[in-house]
Picture 1 (cartoon, rainbow, N blue to C red):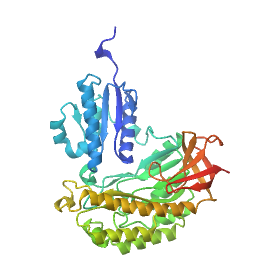
Picture 2 (tube, rainbow, N blue to C red):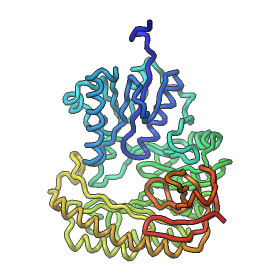
Picture 3 (cartoon, rainbow, N blue to C red):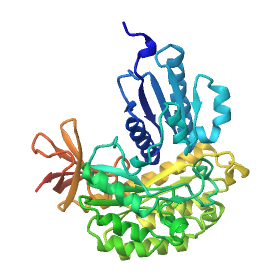
Picture 4 (cartoon, rainbow, N blue to C red):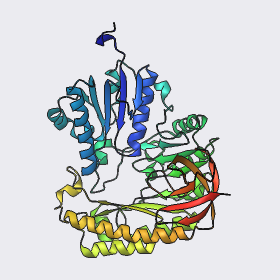
Length: 436
């Protein structure tokens, strides 16, 4: 009869937060399996005896979700359902000392850059030959590619530099190798992510080198779409737009977080730009990459935001007519520059302002989508559920943007394939179509 001491360990990695965290978990998964350790990601079976929680510490809601998840597994450990509990990621980086005191059931806490130390808990080594290899936890046909880590920007509201450190680009050769490996395993779409993708290359090449990176990734055989996320507006490398316009497999899409439409607020936020410069940049992007879809994010209720400032943001949103837009309520984060300000906008006012902006964006999005009826788009089919296929055009990123919905009872498509879809109907945030 087997004793508990002879039981082979099985690890379950639980990921919270953004796509950058997901990539970290995928690297962790690859390293653990490369060391011969049985590992799953987000297992629903609850048959792992070791759990690693990869946390998010960005804003209050994300921190609370991370703490709730850790406590759930701490209870499971108390009940004998798991043997070991490890915590890593942003929350662990930021609040390690407090967490060790408050949740003693956790066997060890690790920061965002401490994967080798975590592996040692499993008597495993960080295998450098696995750099560029990654087990994908999303659908195989698309994958996130993290081009850099950390951030050097001084934004008032942001705690990311506290958790991720300064900006550090990955070499082009390493990224191209990873892209080739992904393509070999069936990935057709690369989603480029970073804390600040426009800063790419400054540290290792002494210049902003996003344009060359895009060119080199565009040359990788099998990659049909490349999508650019998290492009900081200040110091945007304009030569990247030329590459985007020239290369068919670089999506006419950019995610460029702008945060506000008031020059006064942009100064308070330490964004290094003005509304006038921002509008000029958006116009130039649209001129150099005709038909590009622009996604942005804004913040409601940063300290010092008056009704007049908010009205500036409303006017900005109406004037710019972004294809995609998200808005977050300001979160008062300790150790950030803005923490020294009074958090003077009440929570209900923040939410009211966010709701107003999203209401305006719904109208804009609906008008833009109505114009697509009758047009045909190359569409990547992501999944099938509830009698429908769900896909995306080049103007849409997974999970955050519009989807194209196709009746699966009438049409047969393959998940992970591209199809030409004619749009037959549209709502604020979805398109409906059929293959042609």
